Image (cartoon, rainbow, N blue to C red):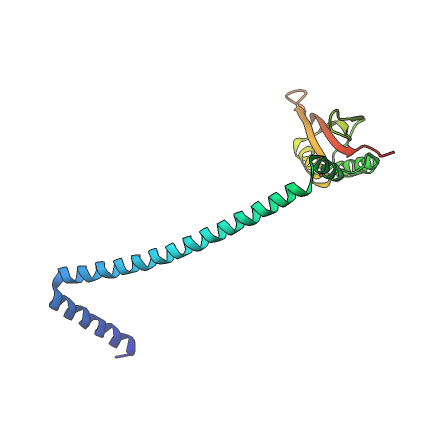
Length: 190
């Protein structure tokens, strides 16, 4: 016999001996004791991990509270507004942003018709302007969707205010769409 067969034979003989000495109830009892011991070991480990995670959570909360209090003390509301406004590009960038929009349309195979453009200040914003770009498009939906996604990915200061899609007739191949972007800028400083 090889070693595996010898080991299996020895285990089989041990099982028969335990069953003969303890009976069926004894074997079941030993199995239940082993299962209880394993459950206790897993419960103890889970308890230790829970305590460790709780302590880490408390440490993170304390750090966040200290950081938040320090940040609140460092900046007045006027400073926070100024920092927020500094995130936006100057309105001088609007021409290069239009180039990005037209390049995105070209790469998505969307032909842009004559659009409407208007730049006006945002009341009560403390120095922000909005540049509305309204573009009529005649194309299938997928290229228009690709075009809009590319513009929004490349211009983080842009928002999609409206995307209206209409089918002029049941047999029409292309859709008539209206894409309205709003780009936000800081006012030019004199």
